[in-house]
Every structure is written in C-alpha cells, then in structure tokens.
Length: 321
Ligand SMILES: C[S@@+](CC[C@H](N)C(=O)[O-])C[C@H]1O[C@@H](n2cnc3c(N)ncnc32)[C@H](O)[C@@H]1O
Image (tube, rainbow, N blue to C red):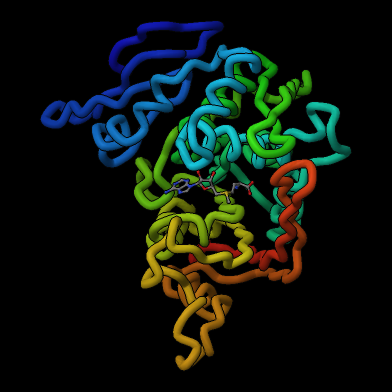
C-alpha cells in the first residue's frame, strides 16, 4: 500500500499502491475501490481518464440529457450500453428482473465439469462481477474478479462495498431506466474482491490459483494466446480452469492475426477455431477434462433485441498435479 486518501468500512476507496521493489516504486492508483494493477498504469490513466474521472452519482434525469447529446459511439454512451448488457445479465435475479443468472449457472457448471475445485479462484474478464460472487459460493478461499474495464469493476466494487448498486438498463435508443441490484446477505464479502487487471499480463507469481475461469473472454481480448498462457502460468499444478466462447471474432477486439481460427479456411483445420484452441491449451500444458458444445448465452441489447450465442465450453487441468 502507498497512501490511503479515502476509506469506508475497512475498504480503501481512493489511494495508491506502489511496486514493492524500491528500485521501481511504480505507483498504481486505487479509484472507487478499484486497484489498477496493469503493466503500464500511466497509459491506462491516459486512455481511460474520462471514465476514471466520471461521477457515479448522476441522476437518470441528467444522464439522459448527456446521453442524448453525445454520439452512440462516445465512451459515455458505449459504457452505459455495456453496463446495461452485462449488469442485466449478471444481476437480473438480484434486481427482481429475472429468475436466475446465466453467469452464476455457467460458473457452477464449469466447477461441476472439473469435479473437485479448490481456491484461490480467479475470474478473468469477469465484467461486473457476478462470476466471482458465484465462485465464492463453490470454492473455499479468496476469489478475485478481474477486468480491464473501469466502469464494470466500479459497479462490482460498489455492490461489494455498499451491498447495493444502481445501473441503467437500455430500453431503446438512448432511453434507459434505472435498476438496483442488492447483494444477498449470506454473500462472503470478505473473500471476494475486484481488481483492474490485464488478463494478458497478470501481476502474480506462477502457480498461485487453484481455479481460473475465463467466460467469453477468448474472442474479446487483443491476445487470446497470451491470455491462455497466463491462465496456465496462474494455475498451480493440478489446478483446474474452464472457459466458454462463441468464437465471435471481431477486429475491434482482436487483430485478425491473433484470432484462433476464424480465417484461412484453406488451412489444415479449414478455419475452425476449436482445433486451434485445443492445440493452444495443449501447448501450455492444459489437459482437457470435459467439453460441452452448444451452451446457450443470451444478452439483451434493448427491449426488442436479444443476441443469442452458442458457446463452446471446455474444462481443463494443469499438468503435474
Ligand atoms: C464478452 S465480455 C464477458 C464478460 C463476462 N465474463 C460474461 O461472460 O458475462 C468480455 C470481458 O472481457 C473484458 N476484457 C477485455 N480485454 C481484457 C483484458 N485484456 N483483460 C481483462 N479483461 C478484459 C471486457 O472488459 C469484458 O468485460
């Protein structure tokens, strides 16, 4: 820990961490409870200052004015649309909008596919956090939700710290309504945390985790191969992990040369992604223990639009257990 600028109920809300190597002493900000522990925190601050500096207490009345006057692609509207997509999916049940949570169900299913699971656990690309809360109900020990998005980690941190959080759900166009999720009383809040981490460059020594989940991350990250190499590095020998993916490759997220398949249909595997993913897991010493294809995942874009995905789900263990 460097300095603590604001604290609430035992949580550091604003402050700094710094590298424990005195020769380095690099500073990492903690903002709204979210520690930013990435390879280059200066670049992260420069690139996301509009989010880091944004207020979380704007009432819907003013939010709707701001949303109406900036373009849809502006980070302001893009962030509230992404929060609408993922918070609606993660916390539909905790806000009285849905009966269950797909993410929580996927986490339980992944753990069941692995058989025995042990912590500490890491939910990579965990977005607004439900995966980490779900894993805490299955494994013993600490559970960390990690994502690069400040708005998403801030939402998860607020729910963790305050027991409730509001977000705006998209009805259509730039028309939104406010939703509130409430954390169930039996949530083991002292074992869960949410950090801003890059899944391609994780700040932990090798072998520290018993379980790593990467739900719908492979096709949403600039370096899927680097991420899988980090998953293997994080797992203790014999540790387990699982991932799901719709292989929905896009150049906004991943340059084409880094896609796992999805191109070059003249090649050995005819452009299929599954064989490339399996070969990559094998290359990093991750042995597949169970697979399931056709796992459903739906995301509500707005009141009249829902995206339906069919996911490949793969559970694996690191060699050497
Ligand atoms: C398709 S969403 C999936 C979210 C969540 N796992 C789920 O299934 O609901 C992909 C997530 O990966 C995050 N992400 C993208 N690049 C990342 C990176 N380099 N490190 C960590 N998370 C990243 C995004 O911010 C986003 O929350």
